[in-house]
Image 1 (tube, rainbow, N blue to C red):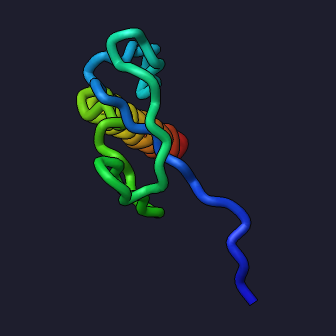
Image 2: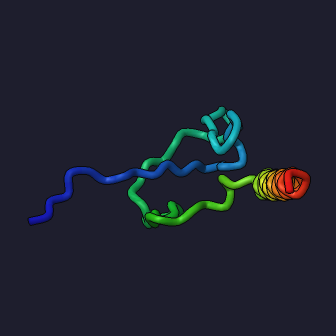
Image 3: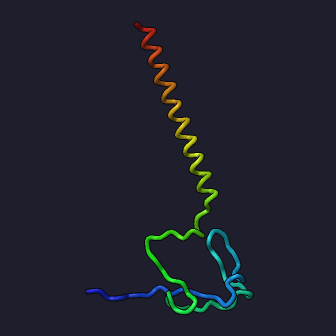
Length: 97
């Protein structure tokens, strides 16, 4: 048996460009934005909700690519350290013989 216990509400604004940015993806109301208009998803100008999706406005692509490059360079450096250590160990074994 399934029973709905709650519903997610979305807030729309008469002037969304008037919202004040707090940082990241957070905004707050301002005199320019007007009062929030609370409605359920997919009603009027409100958008819909979808689970399991990533909203692109929350992702800083430049930062993600920079992190990817740093991680790749770190992996390359670590693999060179392992290769150098292996070569040194081979030289030590050769000297012992």
